Amino acid sequence: MVMDREKQRQRYIAGTEGAPPVPPPGGYRGARRQQGPAVPPGAPYPTVPPASPAGATAPGEEKRPASAFGWVTLGVAALFAVILLGTFLAGATDALYGITMIALQLAVLGVVIASLFSARARMLGGIALIITLFFNVATVGGISALRTSAAGTYDGVKSDAQKHEEAYPGIKGTDPQDALNQQSLEEVRASADSLFADIRTALTEEFGYEWVQVGDEDIRPERNGYGGESMLSEYTTASWATTEPIQDYDRKTAVMGVIQNVVIQHGMYGLYAFNDPSTSSIDPSMMAKLYGSDDPRTQHTWESYSENYPEPLRFYADIYDLSNDQDGSFLTTRQAQNARTGEPLEGLQLTVIASGVLSDADRDAFVKKLEEYPGFP
Image (cartoon, rainbow, N blue to C red; front, side, top):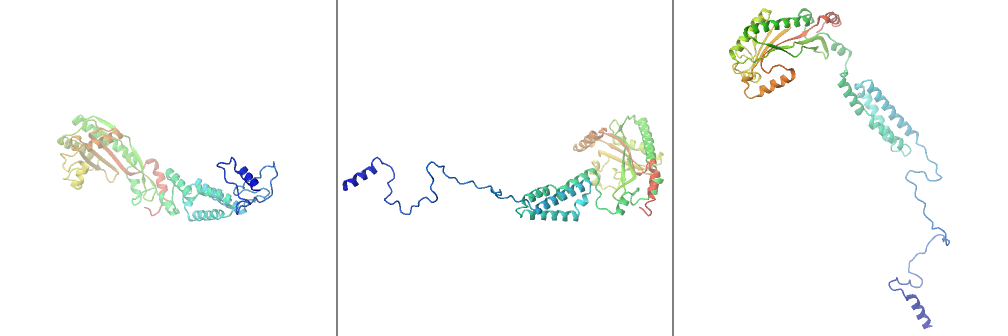
């Protein structure tokens, strides 16, 4: 018996160097055996079916349709987007920023957020949220404001009375009869042309100057003081300039003397020199900033003025002298002006400006329009 056990022990351990020890009789304590049905020999090993993706319908299970609330949410968002686009295309920027539109925006947003908490409405609610993010009061209203501002069509929230005032043909605080009684735009143009011609002739005969015309005339509508444009205009002539500098003090004085004689002959007042401290009311420190000095002998600019009040014509005669430019800043200014208008850097320049003038072609329409404004301005 002892020999049989020894032989059996040797049979189990022979050639097992490094192998795990044989389990003790009866197996390890606490070991569990496989539960479930036995797998027949040769049968495939059973596998666990994969889990369905989140939200997917399991085999045999009927898919639930989206709730009516989801469709309502999507419809509300789409309808609000259509309303915004229609208002935008109509150019009603004020309506986009009105209390009603903002209240509707908040109501739509509330419905969309509520739909996101419903499992059956969540997908359509997400689509409605995307629509709301693209089409909302802030985005559409901002684009509308930019468009109306660029096109100049923004009127703001104005009453009928305000819109009526904006169309006033005259200028606030000015008697419209003044525009009817004074020189018309065409008469001012003719007077300026005659004045310029006589000044050029006199100075050419006296000093031999040659001339060049600078720029073109400019006609700009005058504001009426009520937020709109009047039927009156500000008229600026093209300028005339000498082709050579005028730098000597005595020569400048003589030139201005000749000009004064001509303007008086045209029924205008004598020249008023803004740059001359003996006659000008401009503070000396301001005069130095405007003309380079408070001494006419060292000034880079002489500026004289005349008018034919109560007529609207205002005449300016300026002399630019780079020899009195102390730091080069005036040269820079003149070079910039030359680049814009082509005028000479130095010399005499003549210009006429007339404000609040009425064209002969607009006279009848002006009178007719005034009938709608009794008691104005």
